[in-house]
Length: 84
Image (cartoon, rainbow, N blue to C red; front, top):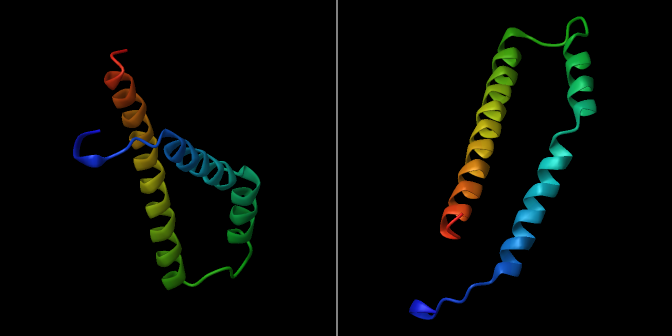
């Protein structure tokens, strides 16, 4: 290996599996359904709290989009390295 680096595919596999498991837990539609029901309760929030919650939801959406793009780029790049 150049520069003394070794390739540890098993370590990468474990990391990817960990990411996959974490994302699977995050994708529970039931959690989000309960969250929306909570928001619909009368008196749920103040205008200031709504701004904070909206910012968090916007950030989560942006991160989800970025993760989807990175996943696609990772797959595309990995295939390109292998010449596929």
